[in-house]
Image (cartoon, rainbow, N blue to C red; front, side, top):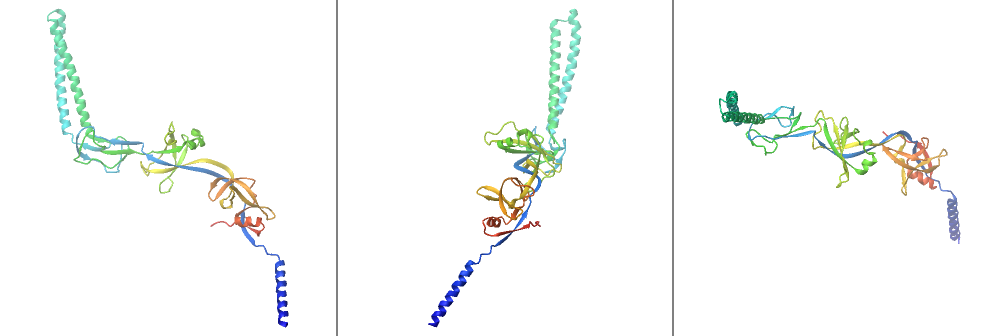
Length: 372
């Protein structure tokens, strides 16, 4: 009987204890979040397009006469000046032809002198009837034939001289010689492949294609991609090219197959770092906002497609503020909306701040700590 009473008493005590615990209010968790205020600054939007480099001049050195290569006077990849001799061909046969042509010209000139003397001799005689008209006509025809022969001989001399000159192949522009495609002893002809390519690429051309929409969005020729606009170049290793390139031309039609518009820019290339055939990224500033309101990117939360920040009023109460995201600037983003430079917003701990708005905790704010 005693044991039963003790058992009942124990249960009663436990029940009372349980009721007492249930009546005690649950302590709310406290969440510490970092807060900051927006800052003002200028932001810009940049776009990039793939560009291909091309030389200003790519001169193929082609033989104009047949013959054997006698000398090669440049090294592969060597800088050359206009007029520098690159190749010499064996010109013996052409010099012999020139000598024959010059001899023929001397003979033709002598024949012309004789024909002129004969004509001068017959001209007064035919007037006074001392010789027949036919004799004079024969002398005149001989003179005209001698004139024609001399003209033909002089043309042959000029052609022979040209062929001799063609045996010396020179650089047509200042530039860099490519790798030789003809060596000493090779037989070349006018229908042969180019013996070498001389490229001039200071400045160097950059061709890049933009979409029709990009062209229209950038206000066409008056925008940041119109003629005269400056763009920057990003090399394939990720580094920026010193200086800038200038847009020099815009094609007059949009490609019907790709819907793109071709642009040309030029950049100074004094050290020949850029080479034809390379690819670069052409980077242009397409939009700029002055004195924009900037918030840390991590402070922006998206709920059901709506961007917003969590603001904290002067009593420490959080509330959401819808915003419109603008241009990024480093770790910040420009925003517009019901927010000002004095608005205190939650930077880190946005999820905890949302929980306190649902009554699931208390909010404690501390200033945002600067990043190292």
